Image (tube, rainbow, N blue to C red; front, side, top):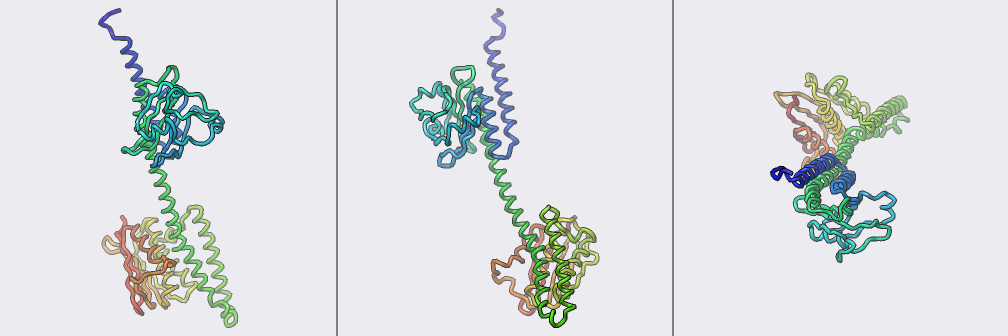
Length: 388
């Protein structure tokens, strides 16, 4: 043998280190893109078992007070897992790692005085490696590995490898938790949006029908022809509303603007109100700019809410809807000659109209102004930058 040649043991260590790094890289890549919590937990425990060449692996997720709230296993069948019974309570060596927040490598846990013992039907385990998982210094959980394959116990290189993996596992767990929180917030926001859309469109239309039917009992006796016409119009409107609800449920948000632009959409909206109330409505939107569908849809929702408020609360005879662009600003105004109100007075929790309109205006990057007073009518003015 050439004494100046490479040391075979050094070459073996180098190849082993290279293989460890490749396995670590593969394991990290495997967990990095999973954003659902339970799947990423299971993937972590499966990958770490392969990484450390262990017969069994587990991942315990702990609460802030150190209790185990989730316990994922790898190397056990579902039947074996069920036979073991309830989750561990964090006693013995598992609790030690949780409390101490540091790694433990034990040649044979059956001989360790700190062990708590195994429940019935638990597989036989000897060599043990436990590594904490944390994010920004806060404990997230612990990795447990048992029965090193092909060796009597886990080595120092196994511990280093699993500790490196645990750093990335903590980040993957945190990312999955954040993703679930974002999804939960998105569900809440979507519910609020649906509530606004129902209130601003469908519910307002149904309410307009009820206004148109209020005096039908009297008309039946005094003017039957008008009563019949009123009922027939109401039936037609309710049929259209049912169709709109179906479209809404299937995710097809209805838009009055799609066929003829905002001017046609506002005119159709005004006609809906005219059919069911004595309110006279003028639409002044000639030359209104073509707008993106999402913007025009929101503008129509605001106009519908404003007109509904006029019909229900203003006791007005006349209303005007105006839409125009000046420079780089778009202006939507709904005005009436009704009794007016104090915009600064507190409103009851059952009246969400102005709040809904303000939220829609802010979502568009604009602002909503309300000008009103006793016996002075009301002006609802939306100002927003003109979309490109």
